Length: 67
Image 1 (cartoon, rainbow, N blue to C red):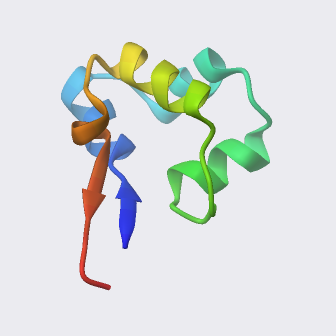
Image 2: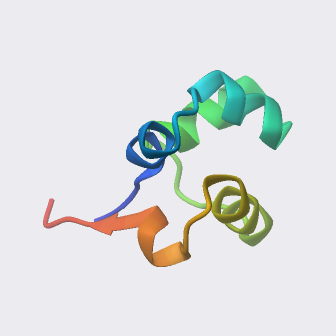
């Protein structure tokens, strides 16, 4: 299973979920689902924006687990 690693990256960068939510400009419902790994897909533009905001690569943005 692939999981979004946003919470760890936010902590590393000293940022909050609220800060990220405001930067992304998406609905809170979609943001919450994405952050909590409850979504089936993420748009490429959101992946790019997350990488730019969190100063990371796509490899750092995602974790692969054996669930």
